[in-house]
Amino acid sequence: MALVPEATFVVGAATREAVTRGSATRVSAYCLDRLEVTTEAFAACVASGRCSPPLKGGSCSFERSGAERRPINCVGVLQANDFCKARVKRLPSEAEWESAAGAGARAYPWGDEPPGQGRVLGRRRERPRLRQAP
Image (tube, rainbow, N blue to C red; front, side, top):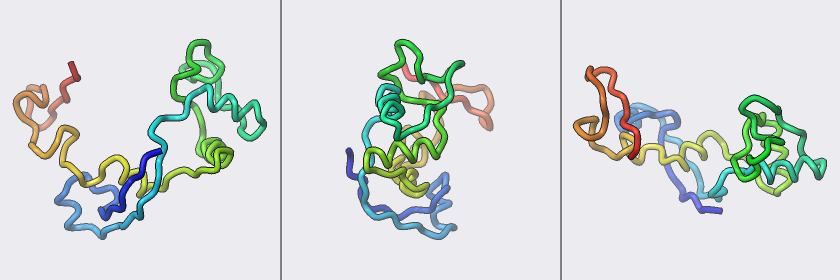
């Protein structure tokens, strides 16, 4: 688990400028798992009877051969909550999730510098496409 430090920010603010216009939310420090829940871990919870099985088939990973160590998907919020309770944990609140994702820490995924040469690809300024990582 990782300790996420206390933070104050505007929930849902996409830019630092929006922070000055909104009302600040304070989130106390909390712990968050570093890794996603694996299909294998969720299957063990289902086998114990503490979790209900998620959807199967299609792109869902539950009971798919070779997907045991991949993150579980096709799980509803109630099932995720049951998994957390079985582990004596809880789901993060919306504000905690934004805080952990770095809300207000930077203007763009790459930092604070605006889109430009080497950061985005596109022909029109108003609709840049992000460059894929090498």
